[in-house]
Amino acid sequence: MLDYIIVGSGLAGISFAETVLQKGKTILVVDSERRSSSLVAGGMYNPVVLKRFTEVWKVRVQLDIARPFFKSLEDKLQVTLDHKLPLLRRFMSVEEQNNWFEASDKPNLSPYLSSQLVKNQNQGVYAPFSFGEVFETGYVDTALLIEKYRIYLKNNQRYICEDFDFSALSYNSEFVSYKGIEARNIIFAEGYGMLDNPFFKDLPLDGTKGELLIVKIPQLKFDQILKAGVFLIPIGNDLYKVGATYDWDDKTDVVSEKGKEELLEGLRSVVNLEFEIVEHIAGVRPTVKDRRPLVGQAKESSRIHILNGLGTRGVLLGPFLAKELYLNIEEAVPLDANISIARFYKKKL
Image (cartoon, rainbow, N blue to C red; front, side, top):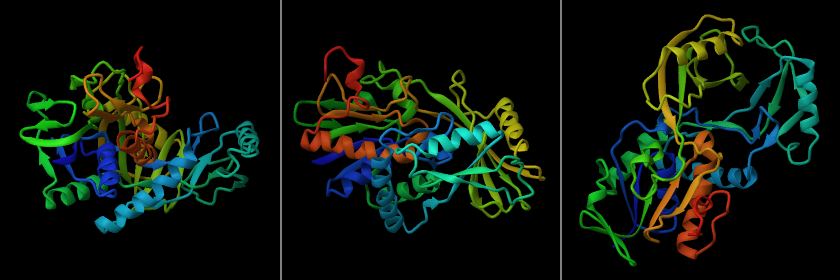
């Protein structure tokens, strides 16, 4: 009997799969390989909410889990995934500078926000009031991670590529069974696909469509992440990710002219160089209205679990939530009320 069946091989599914494999558990991953929002994510991680100058929830814990987690994946898959890059936040006024200095003095933010202005040295970038530098930032190549991890799973006979068939799932107090495969637990990490899941479709997942561009700007030569309305992430070979849009109405992963124009407007407001659009991609992020993840067990069975709602900060949340869910299942450690789906039910699960 397996320890876990995991449905989904995006960032949430991979985070849980790798967490339990490192604990010596046995797994099977089921995924249809339809486009995952993780494939089109910017993959950026940043400890500070730069709009409001607030610390990301539990960010110190998340960073301390994520860094060794992705390092172990790099060693396992023999690829570079975690690109540690400084993040520069452009200022557009003296008032913004003052707000930054005020935030950088706060004890919880001072480890992450430089108290020194960074002067703009790049003529291709419009930054009349300089930048503020954020520490402990970078991006994870989520598309490469998913590609390589799926190959790893397939090579080790731990992967089935298909739409999950809920009619083929049965369960009792001891285990679940899917098409004759028995496991002690099943984890649903389907992202926005959760809306078709009969066990969890009543949870308030509110997908947010995001679009981003990959552009080539040969003359820019910028090797830091730039946040200036849009974000600009250098990914090598004069290529940059430009993102991201937020659309709460359109739930498709079809690119739109509206999204493209929004990104181009943001890019032109910060870069005054010629560029070429290489790719335009879109996906629906699994977001929740209260901006907290969805973790816990189904009302129907203590063997059926969910790991979802990673939203825009999945790179940091994924490994952290996977560990929390693992400890909850294997050691009965209670889930934090901020992440547990029990917050949506009158009776605690």
